[in-house]
Length: 632
Image (cartoon, rainbow, N blue to C red):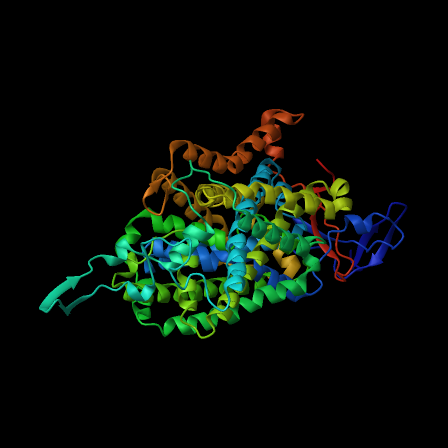
């Protein structure tokens, strides 16, 4: 290749065209330039083309939309409150540096390099562990099913605000769903004063532990109106038709955006990514001016060091990183696969992770400032002001909105923000599953991709219906605890990292990144990929198995044994794919078991069909490990 020529092959002839480069910098790789297909070469090219981002900014905002979502505003404050405030921040920060950012970059880079989604990309690098792709798809499918339930709650609040405008239904205790225990927040203080009663002076009346005996209007609206919650998972109750309508609207919105592919909806993603910050900063300013806010912030930022001696904050800090960054769910490779081959995804990955953590901190400040205010009003401590649970965001934010001028307007803005945070993440998560399916059977399914998208959305909507019943909150928490977080997520991420960092190898991965972006990752990245991330995940996985505790709701209700078995089955439904497929691969081959095993450790990379718009059509492949795109 002394004349900087690269080989171009068509079905009818081989000819030489002028290229930009010869050999790659690594002996593992060469560059093959693939010319764009002629317009009349193949009528099916448009149908089989995966598409790509229209702008480089579309990818960045899509990553922000995916990672910055309900996990920041809903799950992060609830886990932080549950695990001792500042102590959780310590574990979260360590996991972010050692696992979060490195694995985020790794997934995006591999997806961009291979041009494939979560179902197939691990199998190309290590065929023996293709089961990781099936595990990822199972995990993200279960996540999609229950994630939209939070969107349905949000839509319910928006509709209720419109119905009761200009008042708010959780402002007073005069509604049909309220109980005798209901009291406005301003009436929940403890009093110890001197009064006149029937001409008797100095009668002391103390309302001891009033905050424990009473509940706020906000709490009762969420639990008795939105959820109509029963006494346990055994009491299923009826389907709530209002929530059913909201769930249907949520899925209609998701389908409308992704019907032609997420990469065609870039400008919608821009808006859904940026607008929530306007509302979040308004709420932050108001929350910081409330009485008692400093106490809440103090609880948030000051670690209780004794909590760090227990495994729970470490386990949940790490799993929250994976949940918040959407690592291991197949969405990041999908978003990266729509990039041009030479796009600088390193820059976008770091920016996204910083924005994600910044958003979590801001949301945490708002939540804990409100908790400090509630503690001040109830004359109790921040640690005891409310019951920690998945609905924490629906118990804290509506309270501070009541203190704003034009409360109904800001309520709409807040829940619209929550809706955007939920839906933009849902767009990416649902697209991750659909793209994984389409990539695995491209010739059979891509010509019908719009119908496939509709069918999958209908299936997920149907499976979510039990969670909007009166006992649905218990099912929802069961799904959240077992199906897409904790041990199942760590299991998938661990084997994915082993496949990429150890079996495929960080040296080869760095070769690929260098060819795509022109620089080679330094030792920090390779150490995190090879050692820090796998060790952290393995230690936390083992600790979580040893320290396993039965799931409870509200700190008092303990799930029955049969519900726990269902939960464990949800976890194993994704985990089992890894060993089962490995055994299947070793046994199905024509050689001996050992030969099949060794063959399964060699890459089998499918040559990426580059976008027509990618003028620098350089693609990095292995001379000996390139496969044609075939369906299983």
